[in-house]
Amino acid sequence: MRTRIEELEDSPIVDVWRMGFDTPDVIGLWAGEGDLPTPAFICDAAAAALAAGQTFYTANRGIPELRSALADYMAMLYGVRIADARIAVTSSGMNAVMVAAQALIEPGDNVVMVAPSWPNIARAVEIMGGEARMVPLASGNAGWRLDLDALFAQCDGRTRAIYYASPGNPTGWVLERPQAEAVLAFARTRNIAILADEVYHRIIYDRPVAPSMLEIARPDDPVWVLNSFSKAWAMTGWRLGWAVYPAGQAHNIEKLVQFNTSGGPGFLQMGAVAALRDGEPFVREFVARCRAGRDLVEGRLGALPRVRVTPSQAAFYTMFAVDGMADTLGFCKRAVREARVGLAPGMAFGGGADGQIRLCYARSLASLETAMDRLAEFIGSYRE
Image (cartoon, rainbow, N blue to C red; front, side, top):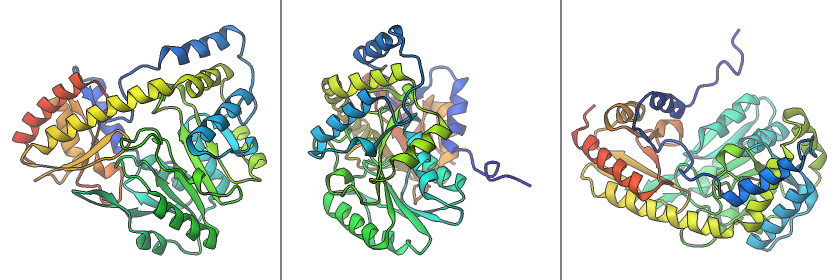
């Protein structure tokens, strides 16, 4: 008998990524990370803590210094003070997702998800024996749009949570305040949890920070806000995230962290403290770099005769389609072999993205120019 884990599908993104391991000179735009190393001031703080002997077990919800820094950081961004008992440090943003899934989902439950979305979220639901129900965003020249009626219609008596990422991966879509208030009101009425993935909260191009559920939710609302240090501070390899959850859940979260990881390394968490307290200049520079990358990529792709680009207002991805392309996985595999550019197939993200490609532009303009030159030639001659 096959187990639930054996039946999980591997991510098509990984299928393409594996091809690039042995292909020289590939410009990898497939993964959700940039090409900048973690800033020195963050590394120095972690190294100093390591040298000082912070190598012992830590509190399940994170070291007090980091929980305090997170409370200060969120108060600065949103004007709301989050109680310490509602904050937990996790061993990556994905770990925050799994902890929330373990706390909420029983076999037979479902989670209604705004899609396209990062495929790992649906897998977390499936690991817990739940069903992931996709509600596709509409896309067009004006960007991405959510139909709230369609979202609410997918909820039934077994719905445990509504999941969305804002800013979204892979779309860059943002849930604006009026729709966020409507989702919160619906969740309150139905006693459905909200899983708000805000990992890209700082990477937005028309304001300093994206709207957050933390700005409108009460402490006792069924709202879980999941976040990560990976993106805004160039810390993907550090595997550190955090979660804000409803009041009264602290003991359950401590148990789940205990049984998953027992807590993260203290010296790495001191690096995260430095990121929160001293990282604003880097965040601003990184966002400006991503904005320039977006403008270059969307301008170059949009000028190609066979390409349709859906504009992005946040995160660091562009979604595009090529006339005559039906197999996005095959397209991406050929792009690695023939153009030496790594891309992510839309089929990995569900929710109507089967005919699109995701490209990460969080890289130097020089590498993006080279990638666009290669893609222009490849797309010009592409035939299935």
